[in-house]
Each structure stands twice: as structure tokens, then as C-alpha cells.
Image (cartoon, rainbow, N blue to C red):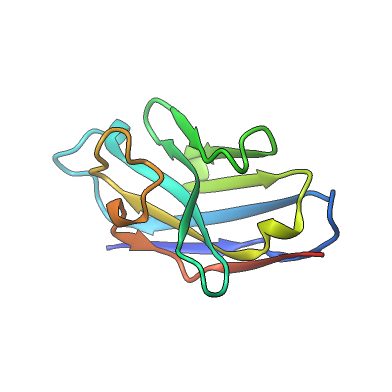
Length: 130
């Protein structure tokens, strides 16, 4: 199984920046090309559904963003370190949520920001913006 561990959350003021990290370990891509592995960031505020924030394919590097963060957040991947990042700029109070990283090797095209597509999840890291 794949293990995912998030880090980097914290309490910030509106307008500030924060960078989250997700370290991946375990799992195997046997039988699959690395290009097919997709990793994503999701967030969930109290009383709300889990929302896709950004995702990236490990192979080709294609990225996807929700409308609410496009232009402010940037997702990246350091394959050598098996670590995914989320650079969050111009933070807003509405960005407050628990942030989760996720991974899967079979994502239906066009559904890269749907939580239901992902099998492996981290434990989450809290981001609070005031």
C-alpha cells in the first residue's frame, strides 16, 4: 500500500503564503506506467464536503486546479524525493480547512479533482487563515 504523510500546515494571516508537503512511500507501479499515477491535494472544512484543490500526474506533469485556487496555488512534484508540494499564496480565510493529499494510479480523465477517484489518503494537515 501507499503511505502518504502531509506536513506544513499552520495558522496564517490573510495574504500570507504557506507551503504544504506530502511525502509518499510504499506501493508499486508494477504493470502500470509512472505516467498514470496521479497525486492530488484536497481540503475539507467543518460541515463541508471534501473538495479537490489541485492534482498532478507524476509522469507528464499535467496539473489541474479548482477555480477557487487557480492563480494563487501551485502544485509541484519532486520525483527524486517522492514528495508533492502545494505552494499557497495570497491566502484567504475561506482557504481554512484540513488539507489532505491523495494518490491513485487509475484516474478517469476529467475527474482528477474528484475525491472518489483516489484510493490512498494521508492523515491531513490543518491550515487556518484569519
